[in-house]
Image 1 (cartoon, rainbow, N blue to C red):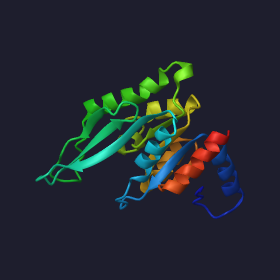
Image 2: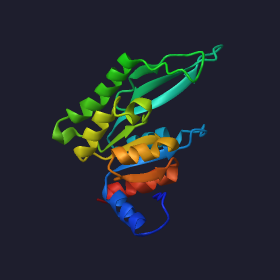
Image 3: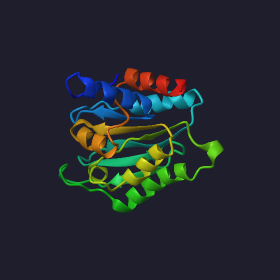
Image 4: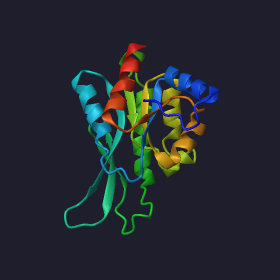
Length: 192
C-alpha cells in the first residue's frame, strides 16, 4: 500500500519505484486517529515469530482520577519505560521532558552500536514530533539507522508527511497505519 499524493504521472511512478527500493517506511496516521494499536500489535506479532525488533513505542495514559495525559517511550527490546511528556493542564502545552528525550535517543544509539551479528531485523520509532520535524530530537539517530541500511518503520502524523518526505529525500515507502499495510511492507522487506 504505497501512497502517492500527486496525480499519477511519471513523477509519481518514479517516486513509487524509489519507495519500493528503500527499506524504511513512514506509517502515516491522522491526528484524529484514536486507535493506534496497529503498530504495537505488529511489533508484538513479529517478536512472537522470532523477528528481532528494537526501537521505541509510545504509550499515552491518564491516571485514575486525573485528566492530564502522560506519554512514555517504551524500549521495544527491554520494556524499559521512559516518561517523555509530563502531565500538562492544557493539552496544547508541550510538556516534553528533554532529559528523558535524551534517554530515549540512547535506545536508538544502542542499535547503532550493536555488533554486526546482533543488529535487529527491524527498528520501529513511534515518534516524529515537533522536535524531529525541525531537525532535532531523535532525527539524527533515525537518519543514521536508515544510512546503515537497517529496516526502519517510523510513525508520522499526516500533517507532517511532507516534512518527513523532505527530510528523507522523498525516499522510503509511505504506508497506512493499519495492520495489513504493515504486514505487506514487512513481507517485501523479508523478500529482499
